[in-house]
Picture 1 (cartoon, rainbow, N blue to C red):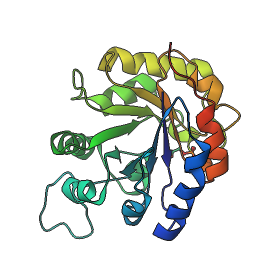
Picture 2: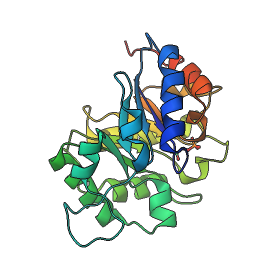
Picture 3: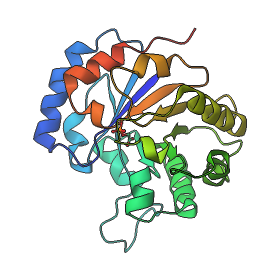
Picture 4: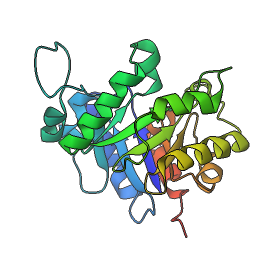
Length: 228
Ligand code: PGA
């Protein structure tokens, strides 16, 4: 099982280092593999031996005249082993489209950064149709993770219903095969993480807001059990 925290634009490097110091003793012996997607400036400050550290976005290009962008090589050198790609906020607030996102996934794969591709439909959209479009070009690819996050469940305190999650994950599984871990995200909390994590075809969770506090995030981590 995987649990990935996404800090979004929160925590300076100093605050991030204090968080790591606080959480490490609390997650000893946890069954889940813990990942944290931190701001670029906190990647170096959060290096440690038990939590994998990654970024929240990267360029599809390797280098060049792209003011304000960051490359896979820069992230790797700073200590990132994975990168969220196509998060709903990148798609909807910053206008990233499916083609650009697919190029970013491919760049990450060739540059040795594990891509965690985020997908999900908006309120009122047909789920399978949207997921099919967002996964286009990836059938048969492995070496990545996918996070299913319905847009209306992100940051709202209203996670998707169990049936809906099950249906979406089954669809992704059919498309991607057995080797690609599929995570659920969207208002995952201490209250619902055990139930969601125990579902068939859910290989882990992506947690935004509830990952910001080290004490409660540590408690969530311990709610996840090893898959039998
Ligand atoms: P949330 O965010 O857990 O705060 O809903 C999830 C995400 O944006 O990945």
